[in-house]
Structure formats: structure tokens, C-alpha cells
Length: 122
Image (cartoon, rainbow, N blue to C red; front, top):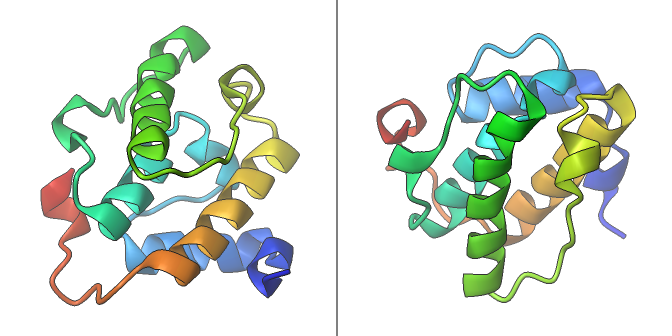
């Protein structure tokens, strides 16, 4: 198994903040699914980022982002199952596990990030 699945919160936050030009303080801030949309966009370049909601607070507002994620998963044959009901609760362990998966998946599938402008894509 990839060692990224065992990466701690500090390393996850450093990776997200440096790679995707973010300023996250807690992994729970990834609960909306917007960060995962950005990660998938960096890999595939075809996530409809204009539809991603970065400002949602309530779980029902976050579901749109998870629909986008599931669409990308389906389009690219990714068989990972995410539970939006669980993830939108913004619990530390659930958020950490989702981001550990995301980091591992990114490392296994991302190409050259030199031309990817995360801020502009948002």
C-alpha cells in the first residue's frame, strides 16, 4: 500500500497549501469537496471548476461538489466510493482519510504540475 495513506495532518496541509496555493489550517476545511475537485482537476484538467462551490457551509450545499466528484470518478473509471453524508460532517478522521486517499491518488496519477495554475482554475 502507498505510504501516503499514512501521512499525517501536518504533511497533508503542507502539501495542499503548497501544491494548490491554498491556506488551509485544518483538514476539516476540505469537507465541502471543493479541494478534492481541485486535486482531480490538476490530474485530469476536465473538472468543471466554474461549478465548484468554495463558499458552502451547510452539508446540503456541499452535495453539488460531491456530484461533480462522482461525475469525474465515473468519467475516468475511478472505483473509489465516497460517502458525502459522512464527509460533509467535517469530522477530523473522515476528512483526513479522504485527503490521504487524495494525496496517494494524486501521486500515482498526476503529471507535470508546472503549467497548472490552481488559483486561476478556481
